[in-house]
Amino acid sequence: MLRTIVFLVLLVNTIQIYAQEDAWVYLTDKPNVSEALANPTSILTQKAIDRKQRHRIQIDSRDVPVNEAYISELKMQTGITVLAKSKWFNTVYVRAVSADNIKDLLALSFVDYIDYADNSLDSATSRTRQIDSQSDIEDISVEFTYGDSQNQVEMINVDALHASGFTGKGITIAVLDSGFPNVNTMQAFQRLRDQGNLLGGYDFVDRTDDVYANTASSHGTLVLSSMAAFIEDEYVGTAPDASYYIFNTEDPSSETPAEESYWVEAIERADSLGVDMVNSSLGYNVFDNEKYNYTTDDMNGKVAFISKGASIAVEKGILVVVSAGNSGATTWRTVTSPADSPDILSIGAVNAMGEYVSFSSQGGEAQVDYQKPDVVARGGTPFLVNEDDTIVQYNGTSFSSPIMCGGIASLWQAIPDVSAIQVIDLVRQSGSQFNNPDDLIGYGIPDLDLARDLGLSLNDNMIDAISFYPNPVSTELNMVFPSTIETLEYAIYNQLGQQVSQQMIQGNSKTIDVSSLSHGVYILKVSTKSSSKSFKFLK
Image (cartoon, rainbow, N blue to C red; front, side, top):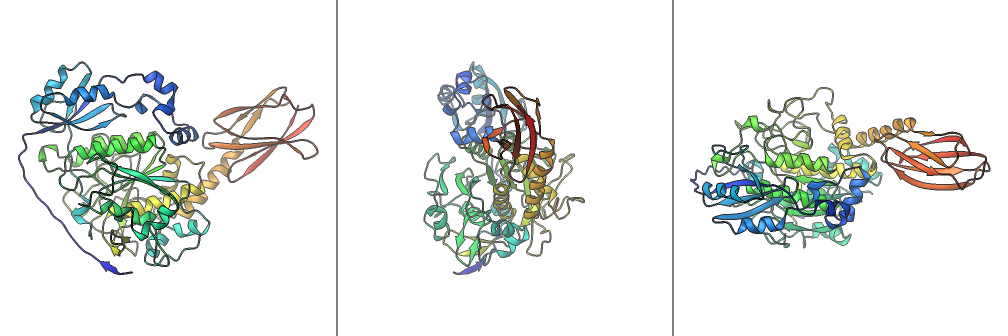
């Protein structure tokens, strides 16, 4: 297997004058919300419903799709092109010949308000952005023998999880990126395909199911390889047995605010499919059209459309992992959106020695009362596999992010009853400088095997809080347990030690039907994934 090191620094400064205008058009309502919520399988896959129930995430009106009749009418308006939509925000992203074309949309009865991408225009809120382009600094081009990937795997101690049988199996990851050529044919992904773990994808830019067709960029292929690639005795990703969807949301030919909307639409699709995790190695702060640019003060998780979408995804139960950005050595310096969201894990970069690399974006004053980046992984010349099945090395937080994402997938397999928010906290707590974070590497380099221990002890401690009533009992025994314990198994034994009942229960409070039991003394044994506790009760 040929190994190469490719170094490419792309610096592009383009000044263009645009007559066109972009905007988010927010709609007044959605049709048939009550009916959809009463029949959630009409709007979500069963896997998505199961994931939400497992983590007690409410299905609400945001899960109902945008009214397609409204979209059709918008497409008929003079000078208007519809580029993307978001059900969570009930909005449509449009591009118009002029600002007047967009303003005319306010006359439509179903248009609530309009948010222009251009700061200088009169709108409910203003926006600004640019992709901290993956090209700006990145140098494009059960027992495992890790080969070249050994350092980046061992740095976060995910090899210990692999040795214990936790390789991401059962965890579904959506990769939102730019260009996935040859993923469907490469030998490095043969194991992934043979196991049926490449679940499909979609190109939101070109609106096609053929997500492999766009060869203008192979960035997504490189990102995916750090998690999913397997070359015997030469290379192992951090989550080789996880399942993957791949979504193209980035247009490499230009930088426009539409890409934020493609991204949000894609993560909404991921939620509908029941995805557990999302990795995205894209970031936005400046665009081709400078009227749309963000400022560093905007990087507070509350301004950028993409950052707000990322926060909703976490609220919906998805664990979102994002590259911090490659602006550490520029005048911008701070993290870009959506890495500025306080609710997601933003990943900075270190080198093979675990030292901060200067291009990795840092925390800034806009991130009030929360730390960015959150943690770091190897982003200084990590090993990846390109579209030609060649092991290569590139620079960028675009690669520290998926290395970490795959590691967390293996971690989550080991502690499946822990919620996404809890997993994020455990990863932070396992960081090498958790007690003394800084704006360069955040909480430091995580020890994901330590995070597993912390997660198991969380349930160990919580089991002591389990209680039941009444005792003696007549017909129903009421179990009460903390929300941190998301699933609980119970078994009832008679005085002879014979099991007479067993079931898995969920929720903060559940009743156990004991009406069929004879009068006498019984033992109730409750168990989590990691510990158990027994009670005696009288019927």
